Amino acid sequence: MLLNAGLLIQDVQLLCFTVVFGVLALQRWRDPTRRWLWYSFLANSAGAALDLGGAHLPLWLGRSLDMEMIPLSYALLNIAIVCFDRRSRRAVWISAILLLAALPLFLAWRQDPAQIRNYALADLLIALECVVTTVLLLRGREVSTRAPRILMGTFLCFFIAVESARFCVAFLIGANPDAWPKLEIISLVTYIVNTSLLPLAFIWLMNARLESELLQQTLMDALTGVLNRRGLEQALEREMAHFRRYGADLTVAMLDLDEFKQLNDCYGHVAGDEVLIGLARLLRQGLRETDVVGRFGGDEFLIVLPHTDARESVRVLEKLRRAVREYAGWLPQDSVRASASFGASNTSGRRSLAAHELLREADTALGQSKQLGRDQVVLFSQAEPQSVAGLSSLS
Image 1 (cartoon, rainbow, N blue to C red):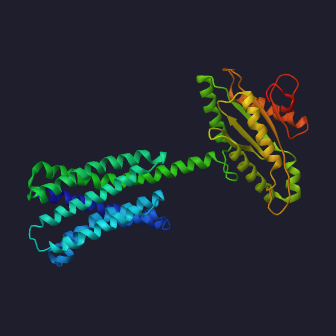
Image 2 (cartoon, rainbow, N blue to C red):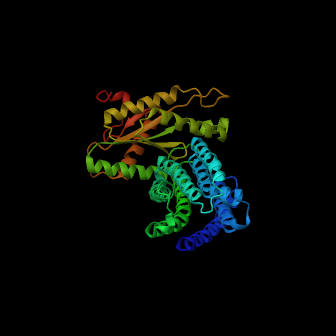
């Protein structure tokens, strides 16, 4: 009786969430995650309807297909997770095989008045489908969605244990799990929590990714795909804090394309955009994984080289300068050559140095590079500016 009351509460919850996820799916129908999530709740609602009308339905429908509805809802949930993670559909096939393998047994046992075996098999099938769901959730490596994944995965592990216990009591012992008061209460609470927690956690999962993507968009340059000025400032402050704590020197370098305005005037702004995209790609390819690159504004880019002294910085920047000068694929339809001027500043153990001071020094060095004839790498110095070619002690 207690479990039946709990199932009624669960059915009302399912109906409410079916409506909510139906609205979400209709708002963005092209999103397969939302669609399959809605289908999952539709399957649950269909199971509730078959359960309520079971006495008036044929046995093959009320006592066989009915038992497949809740496991089917988890199989559809697995498809939603696969779409969300853009993963292989192998898990979907596993879920489908489990459902198809259980159907003949549901049909064969439909004449049993007590339905203990059918309910036991349904509990086992739900547990197995939830194992697939848990594996899919916990295999995700997306940092922004880690918390909801862990929450859902942890609860599903408990849910699997409850369903497995019900199967063991019914199928192996031959007793009715609902006749065990403690197991009945645990099952009731678990079912109600499951109906509330999973859909809310899935909404959290989707919102966590959306929030992360929106944050990335505020930090990334839309044209070149590297960090924008805001992203660069955050990255530089982070690296400066690391430098002040551990003392590992870092270098900040500014660069811009020489005569970029003339290129825009001659070939047009669309061609100029293509050159900027190509420059960003060249910089990413020529830098180390731990280095930071971003578009500071216009045709000006900023590079942060953590854990790098002046000598190593010069080597890296000279390599990039040559790569820019020798690159011939700026515009596929035209033979265009370009060069870039670099200005750099190294912390050189100055723990009290602020980020804006390092940027000012790099900007000053960039201006000195232009004065020396462009296509140069200049390391900031209070003395008379020199290009790298003149810094024999660093080469």
